[in-house]
Image (tube, rainbow, N blue to C red; front, side, top):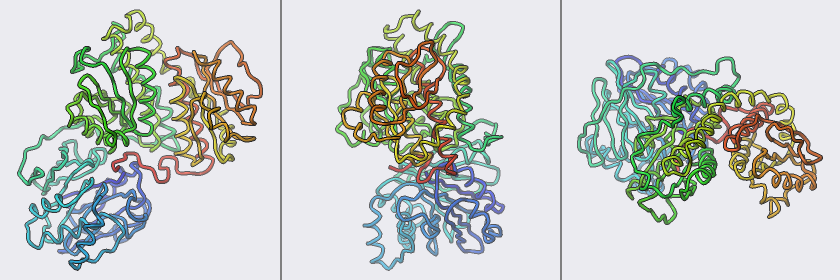
Length: 606
């Protein structure tokens, strides 16, 4: 969600901060701002909208100062305007903040009574005044320590001080934060992707820690204010250069990159010579795990639902799926023989991290399926399975979704073999089909023209439905989510058999309904459900796989055929036309496809 950049240097920093903020735009935001120190003053400039708006401001172009902080904001408290944009400053202190301060109202009332005057509607401004108040009696380290103890909620903070022209303070609880190291300058950032353009040497703050960043060194402190030592990690020497190329949007590029995503994952995890799965470092014995709990949010949750079918089909494990935002608020009955798997593209999803933290506190077995191996979820899990899909910029996840379900499928095969539930001969056949999958996805990507034609009907409808049964049901949910995210059309995914138990009442003449009915074990049943909605006047878009058999139904509006493979892998192929449907619907409406309204790539608040 929000993004933070801080730079302490011996040369002007405003242009570098602006360039770094542009790298954080993909996280989703609605305003931006920058503050620097020069001539003994805090200079603060903010704007509504994109970083481009901020950059065009002539005051920013002439901004002085060798120390500064910048921010892109995703609104939580207060509307998205320049007043509520970060940084927030008093005469002495300027703060940028990711997260939510849950006791901000109580703190604000207390501070107002002490004479503090607030300008914005944000919870963040409370932090500014609290630090300002504590500085009256304490030095910087003690005032920060005292302030952090008074704050309830989650935060990543970047702070500069009028009277301290050579330091930035960073602090973390819940939201990610990293320190970067350069020659004669050091950095603070919420995202290693933004820091990588300046350095490949990074230290990650853990929960409760804070740091003091000077030009030539960095000091780290525990929650209690004691100095601590931290490791410096060296990231890849090659700066990751990722742009749209010839594509109009990142999402279009990322959809087309999915065959490469699958090739990378298969190459990483499959030993083609010996027909084995290269997951050898599982830290638990097979008899130590009897159940698996899959946890995620949004698209990652749909990955978990998809994996549940595979784990049940290929292993004898008990399998459950949880929405991360609900997990920590239930009365969980933790069992020592359970494995908790946390799925997140960014590895920084706040709800998912909170669920992981709860499991760690109860000494549970934890595994992360993530795209960013330096992320909080990856670092705090006992076992990590990277999805190797590369940078994903589009807020609506595409290639990361296929990467997640690929790794979860491979994990289900591995556990099936380890537990003796899957024979070697059966594994060899499944791996053979899996190695053919990238080529099949490549061929399925050629369904463009027909999808472009049908997208008009969805744009003109007030709502739509996506139906699937068995392996296709999680894909129906994902397809509906993509249409909602990008084209702002109401769409719901349902199990095909549930239509007659209520949702059928919503069907009316001309309503578009996507029916996922591949030729699998559930095909005939799904076709029967499809006929029920056709009889009520729905316009059915049938998505199935190629076959010599004709579809046993009449009055289908349109049919899109994907390639054919075994039924385990059909969900990968069914996903492609749904992604393109959402993309073309949004494109024809002229919407901002890579940055849909109100959404963020990395959801770092609850």
